[in-house]
Amino acid sequence: MLLKYRRILLKLSGEAMGSSGQTIDFDAVGNAAEQIAEVARLGVEVGVVVGGGNIWRGRSGGKMDRNRADHMGMLATAINALAMQDALEQRGVPCAVLSAVPMQAFCEPYTAREANRLLAQKTVVIFACGTGCPFFSTDTTAALRAAETGADVLLLAKNVDAVYSADPNAVPGATRYSHVSYDTVIEKDLKATDLTAITLCREQNIPILVFGMRDGENIKKAVSGESVGTLIDRG
Ligand code: UDP
Image (cartoon, rainbow, N blue to C red):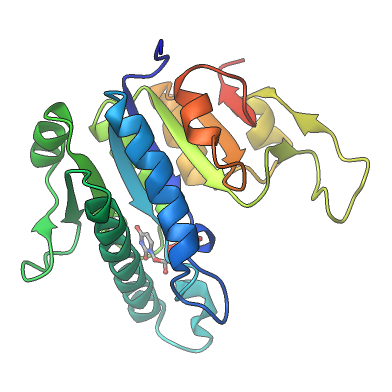
């Protein structure tokens, strides 16, 4: 198979790992791991940033100190990272978890150098604990790690299948974009990702592909250049 992308950064939101009532949904994690395993076997170098929304988001902390609430969110991403590592190892995929917050008993500390070394030897790298700083999201982490590892594309796997002009569930006639520029996403405030993430991608000229996780073939389709979801670039 001809590959469009040699190195990818895949962002899996917390919802792709579990949902309310079932913190870790092993079928969903297994499905994502299966797709990652498939592209890794094709020779694609895969970095994965996992979210934490299935467990905790800092902004849900109510009256909590926001720094502490975000620390809890980062810990949530570490739980998801270990679940994904387990699912990948069960499928015989070499992988490592690198954490922005050192927790040596569970995983290795993140450095860009180590991430790039592992990726070059075809080890899937799972990035835990976001950026290590509060007030950021895992989408922004994904944009940052994509820049640090020289990824060819940022794949944002969501629970909607593309970027729309409005929420397609609430507005049935919403426009579905297959290709849109960073500037349009920012100007129209399209809910593709957050502003920090999209600005960093625009600055570094990293294309973003937004697609749904429900189609079990989407990651493979994306790396082989088939059109899926919405491509965001300079337009
Ligand atoms: N978080 C953070 N700094 C980061 C990344 C994440 O503080 O660099 C925290 C923040 O509280 C966030 C939570 O981790 O709400 C989980 O990440 P996110 O909300 O991005 O997860 P997703 O929505 O993708 O499931």
